[in-house]
Length: 83
Image 1 (cartoon, helix red, strand yellow):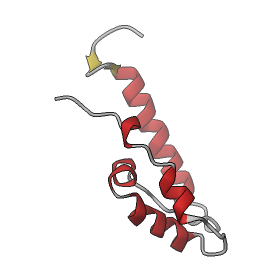
Image 2 (image 1 turned 30 degrees about the vertical axis):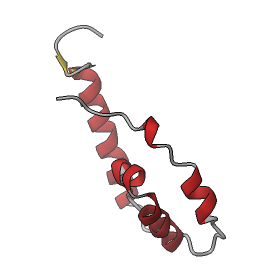
Image 3 (image 1 turned 120 degrees about the horizontal axis):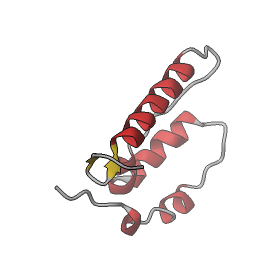
Image 4 (image 1 turned 180 degrees about the vertical axis):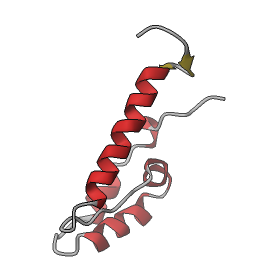
């Protein structure tokens, strides 16, 4: 894509992503039989145990292994935004 950009991303791509995200959220909200747990990515990286507890509480019928879940978090993969 060409043209002006917001940071490193072309405007059209950012606008398209935001539109798609809004459509998905609206679709989920309109499903009476769907429960949703929103998790902030930066929270999952910075406080994985807190998020693991939320996921386990959201899915109590599953026997989730907290140790394995926390072992998969790799802070090195977190992209740092530069100002």
